[in-house]
Amino acid sequence: MGNKYVLDAIDREILFHLERDGRLSNVELAERVGLTPPPCLRRVKRLEEQGVITGYRARINPAATGRPLEVIVSIEVAISDKKTLADLETTIAGYEEVIEFRRLFGTPDYHMRVLVADHEAYEHFQTEKIIGIPGVARVISHLTMKKIKVSD
Image 1 (cartoon, rainbow, N blue to C red):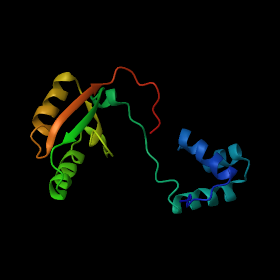
Image 2: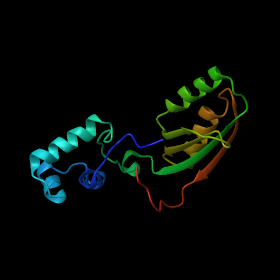
Image 3: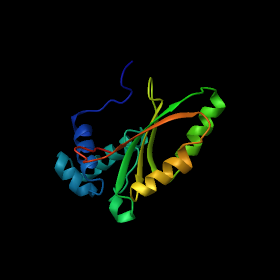
């Protein structure tokens, strides 16, 4: 199983700089990677078209939006029929508080990151939105003490 993307050193350098600052102008990016602007722009467009670059976005401070408390949540399910799992995934993925949601191999079955205002808001989220979803057997919550490294 090989990598379907063929990236040379310049492509990797472009990705390195765009990961750190997606707002770089093409002129600044070209200067940093040692190209003139037209071939740099062609490379960026190719990387976008190939799906290597999947988008650009702003990172928002959760405290500025009133949701400074991050909780890491594991969910174990007690049922594995496809419809129940699909309904569970659709329901949870639709919650504004959930900023990341993954199905895992093994135990736990699901992992999610939740942003809320405070402990009371999380308790409400867990008891009113998660517990009671058909198939949910166990919810394990971990409060984030400190972010050491985040690369999203």
